[in-house]
Length: 68
Image (cartoon, rainbow, N blue to C red):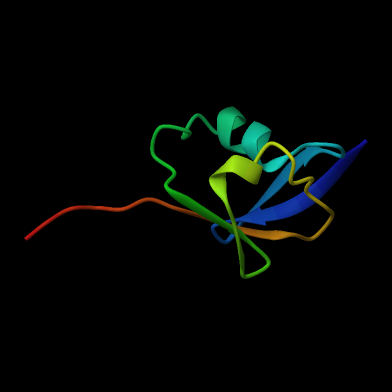
């Protein structure tokens, strides 16, 4: 069964029991993501594999860009 979540403003259909780390891996952006928030709450990186996603979750995946 699938659920719908919003990732950085875009809808995504994912497996019902997916965790945050698996989503990041599936999107092939693991090396870029520095911070993640689900429903406006920061999820610490060490908890990504434990954090189960739910229908309607709003996920923001952030990376830092250097510049001057």
